Length: 259
Ligand SMILES: Cc1cc2nc3c(=O)[nH]c(=O)nc-3n(C[C@H](O)[C@H](O)[C@H](O)COP(=O)(O)O)c2cc1C
Image (cartoon, rainbow, N blue to C red; front, side, top):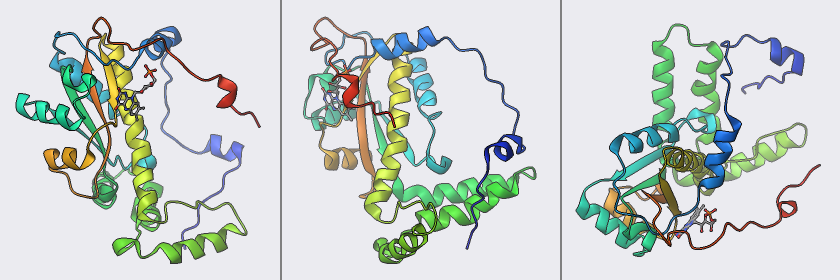
């Protein structure tokens, strides 16, 4: 059984880590981006430079991901014919039909093992890799994410974690394939949000879309059943009438709870 070390705060602060600089940031610039991002449903015909798309996709891939396993994919549909098909599969909604570009963020829980092996081989190739990292990807992730063929480990994992959890804090998920999907979608959605904020920072606009036919989109992109369409995101420059209404949010007291 792998022992997970429990740190106290002094010990955690004193443990050896890569020294990190925290560069000065411009909070106002960040909030300008966050506040001016709106879901745009009608775009102008101004093209989006390829360099903008590439920088925004690179920013997407800087999102944090669970266990750093990066079980996400970005499918950028570039040919006019495929783009038209994709817009059709996005139910022909204006945000898709008028878009200059459309990317599809895809969650790939089924690729956890392959990514884990890739991580391990990269760690093994570097003699400076910490032993703890090798242990994490060599043992812990394999226990946590392996659900067995067709998810048959579920009852055993449930019993083991429930029993263990009686005595000490214990991670309870993921213990079945549905939770693996949730696990992969969480990280993928963070990448999608990075992408939308980057697009806005570049002076362009976007619209996230889950109003789509996931089965048809998967077929178009050549994806397997286990892949999950996280969301399609259209990109372009906002056109007159492209914002359907003023920004509306519930009162923050409905969402923010202090304990
Ligand atoms: C996961 C997700 C799926 C969405 N799907 C659609 C969609 O299919 N079509 C659409 O026009 N807007 C879609 N939206 C946009 C929301 O309607 C929009 O974010 C919300 O109304 C708030 O407006 P704002 O983004 O301008 O702040 C989606 C947003 C999210 C996060």
